[in-house]
Image (tube, rainbow, N blue to C red; front, side, top):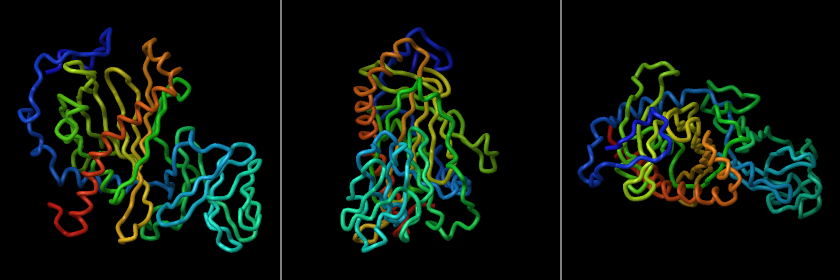
Length: 342
């Protein structure tokens, strides 16, 4: 039991668990985590507009010195920054003789094909056409209008629909990326099951209670899983918070802290389909952005120590995603072989 109410702002953000409940004796949650409830939330997310935008990676990681090579939804993409620092994206195959543009250098914002010197500034040239790209300061997005021809109700959007974030100038931002053998819906379904947190990640979460879950015919405003949970620090020391999980699009889940330490902070989980592996199995990238904020004076120090704090945040995310990818991959395996319950 947590001795502090997450609705109150204690002088210190820490709580002390009165009694440590053994893992096997915590309250079971399998009855609450109804497969039909999670499936309904997933269907609502999949029906929301996304405008053909895909997350390509972390904005901080794309420097002016070199391009990125990406395969998104089976399409080979190259991404770089032009002379003004603006993100440019387009097909990753040179239109001349098919060279992989991801291996070509960038000089003064111009991508120069290393096979025969075709210079790409980001404007259409010699059969090469740019793709819409967007840098939101945290993530870089690329729009692929032909990636999902079966999604007929979608229309291209000028910009990706971004979740509401705290001010980046006063936030600590970290992005973690990994990939697994599954489809985006398996990643999203994992995030729309908050009940598994304390069971599957006992090293990170304790005292988890789902305060409310969306009804089958809920409005978009009420389509959220609200959770009271304590993040473990060490021993019996915890940080209790209240968080809301929402799915603003078919491949994105946002966790927002609504009470307690770090109120207003968000964790965005984006699932980007990559294509198939040599065995024909789907591969999906997970790009998770943490935008952490706090009104406590000590957070200013953490913000200044970003180069030290960011690797620690990525390490924590990596540990959680080693488990959650196993969850998502298992879900895909059962679905693909007709053995998934429900």
